[in-house]
Length: 210
Length: 210
DNA sequence: AACGACATTACCCATTTGGGTGATTTACAT
DNA sequence: ATGTAAATCACCCAAATGGGTAATGTCGTT
Image (cartoon, rainbow over all chains, first blue to last red; front, side, top):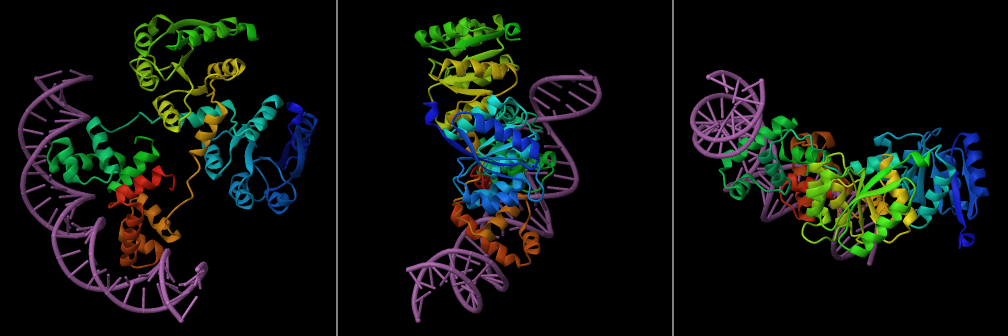
């Protein structure tokens, strides 16, 4: 089975030593072959069409266009390209930017090469490899933040706001007067430092409260 | 190293055969031990305090309280408990509900027992194991849906709306009249089938447009 | 050439919202 | 017991919003 596999890989990595080492690991592994390497995103963008990788390994720290910005540009050229970030950075912001821009995996550099091979295999089979610490971040982002400053009642109202419900309707739904709803909304605004429904909803959704 | 590991596991699974098989696999593996098994969420909730698992494997199809609903109840009892879903279901809704409620992993039943052991090890080490198809769903949820019905200009306005900006300010920002902004907003409402800023923002955010 | 989508602007009007101030009651914690 | 937070309600007023209708110019497609 394994011998029938032949995964074509391109690598974008500006550090020649790391690139060489990656290339060696992959070429020596059964079923993997490196069909192209680039020292910059620009080089990859220009020449990728000549190679036809199943998977592209992409560094973040690159001269010129960063790996993060390169993702969407590469995807525009080859929408079906599977991009896996391969970097030392574990900052949430970078992780989420990468995934948001269309990366299908995020591996942390320097872990066992066995994991790298396994990750690439996963991509090839339709998976989405992530290093454990990355996976934990990703999973954590789904959990609503519980440090809510808002009271239960205020959360109920906020929920209604996000449905576009107006004060009168909310009041009916909660069996109180519209004045009460107004009061709740004013408190919500104070606590969230906003001054409109749209902004309140936006902030709450970004924080994962609703 | 491996021999120093001893991961204590509890299992909630109503199918006696599957439970037995899981128990066998885990107990026979070096460094794993099953310290408790339950046939229902209710049983787990009542007796979990007597066991002290590092990881709890949780089925979804259970008599009475479902696995999904059990997550938050179990977490309330033991906030530090690491819950991994172990189920046949791959439906997005269930996956996201589980993660939303606080599960740290989601494994699909029936895959190689090697992956199960690896997954549990990952949880123990702070990771978040997911079966490949689940990981792909999770990653995909980060990519903004691009089938936007809105025009570029409308997207700009929508973005401003989500910041709580009012028509006058948006008009200034985009160097057009407030009447124009009103027109754009009306079109946004028509296209999104909403009739307030808050609802438009909410819908757009849910769809991952902003 | 005609059509539709987009961007722009205008006017009118009823309704809603946001902000300010103030009051009562309950409940929980210091 | 005293205070604080929560939930409830009222009144006022200026500003913003939502909905309707209508017009113009540009651009790309058919």
